[in-house]
Image (cartoon, rainbow, N blue to C red; front, side, top):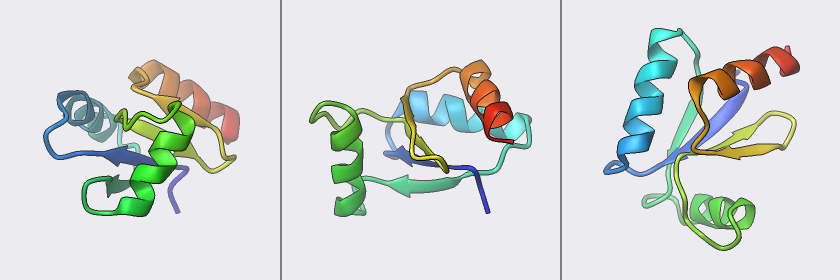
Length: 81
């Protein structure tokens, strides 16, 4: 089981960059395309003041980050470990 879900769109450059960085660090995650899953778009809107801003990461503890750096993701995962 992964520690977070990344909400993305296929055309988001920030999403592609973060996914690449996570892959190089061997960090696994679940990915949900908000254009394909309407409920996911609602989750993203809830944590981003009504905006569909991606990448949005929601962690196993319920907290969320929008467009985080790889360093921020690694720090959060260390906190959850």
